[in-house]
Length: 188
Image (spheres, one colour):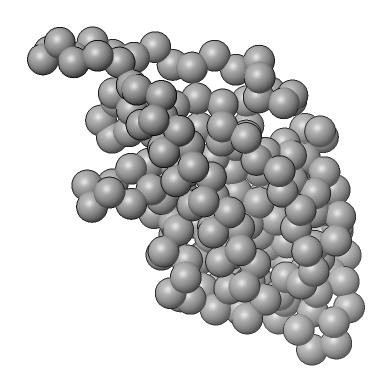
């Protein structure tokens, strides 16, 4: 029974740490930006500079999220302060619960998680502003292991799979990753 629960936790942790809703496989070039909503004040659509700054900030938040998740998972610390620097709810709570679940089952994540994200949509006119990110995560070197003896938890192996995330701009100006999911069933 414990092994089944740990495998379920392993799958959940992989999905959350890779964390991100999947759209389709590809480079992201096929994605079409969301149409800008009409502004009542007649202001023009997003400027190129605003868009570029949003993309850069969102990708930085995404990269920070992956790094913070790996660090917190390796340390088995669901309340690591670096998580809240890059994540917002509901994703923050999902990541924290997954790390806590692995810890309670005597496991932790180790290794490397390779990432090469790209922006697929920017919506600066929405409230709040959002940036959609697509990634092909390589989790082949990222393992869930038993803390006690570093043995790999059966059924917890990873591979390459597609993932997406949403970065949201909050009122204080920070871009945080607010939602996402990994889809190990969609290789890339």
